[in-house]
Length: 100
Image (cartoon, rainbow, N blue to C red; front, side, top):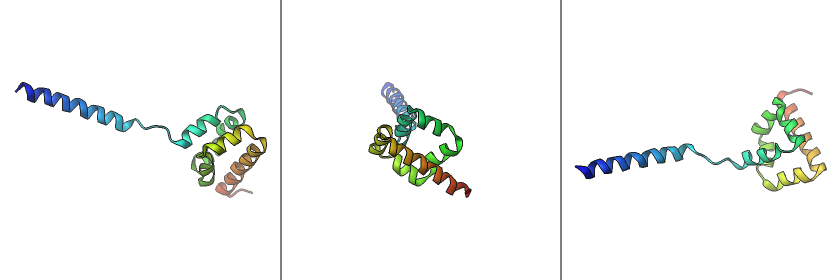
């Protein structure tokens, strides 16, 4: 009888831990890279604009670019790459909204 109670308690604890681990998910590469770029003033300004923030999170081209850590490092170090990226964000926003 005592064994059954201990077994039930242990099973219950294991189930609780398994469920807790299920809900804890690591950040995606995209999230990590965006967090890294948000430390840059120029990106933070861009990100705070809801129009561009939407493009950053939902546009396929932008997400494909930002998921690669090499590209993020390039954005941090290279002024020309930064300018090209900002133009990409602006162009993709225009495409999304249909404005010219």
